[in-house]
Image (cartoon, rainbow, N blue to C red):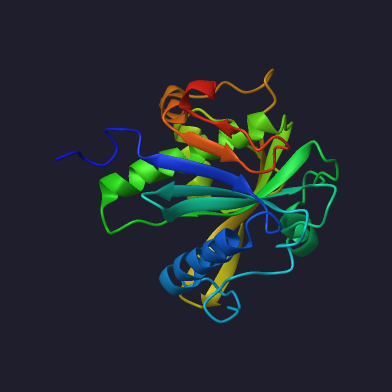
Length: 228
């Protein structure tokens, strides 16, 4: 029997609410299950969905699917439009101003969810990051902006991915006094002259079947077209 991860199992879709309203609705349902139900974040659900004011018309989405099911994803917003870190968490940027240029994009609602299997979680996590870095290269971004807890920063550093803090970590209560995390806001420089994609993400990138619905020609970008 074929094992998960052995034969290029992931499909990637880059899209918007206008192009794929049903798919984005499913991603918002995934977000509610992950961030509110499982992680206990203090977010206000909209029925069985999780969405906020930053799910606006300028947001794009990266969706990671396995056998038709969403297992990971993120929301991406150009920094010349309203975005979460600058408009809600600007108090965390005590050392560097948050960008306002369209060369920078904020990544939010980044996460993966699988069955309780550590190996699968690791594989899907690598695929989600591989999708993110491919998206950044495709959009010719200068830097990614992210609001995250320290576990994400440590993960990136372990994988030789440079990060730049915009301020020191600050403790934030996630809906319950016992559920606190140390939040930071920072950047991941991804311009070609500053970014070298680590091997395990490059290998995973080659296995992704990519559909970029924002392209005017609607052409499918398959495995053979993905650069490392």
